[in-house]
Image (cartoon, rainbow, N blue to C red; front, top):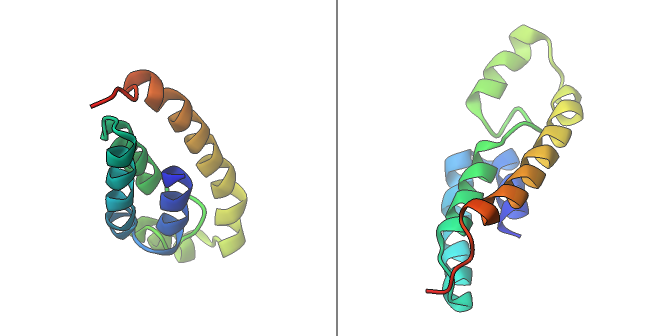
Length: 103
């Protein structure tokens, strides 16, 4: 859930703000489950870094939009599949590398 929430926030606000908003929720979830918070933190880090679907979430996307002749729909067309792929790979690999061990 944190991955999807962070990804959606990252597309609308900056990646730093998205991570800052979701991080306390993830840490609270880990604490309530009694597991290591590291997988949750890594998931947020990955999701906040994957801003491909809009030009407004990351300054570099916005900087290349006009000179490159890109439209908002170009970002959606290419970015949504990239975000989906990133989420699938992250959600698959993160628990393998950082298992949810009880604290």
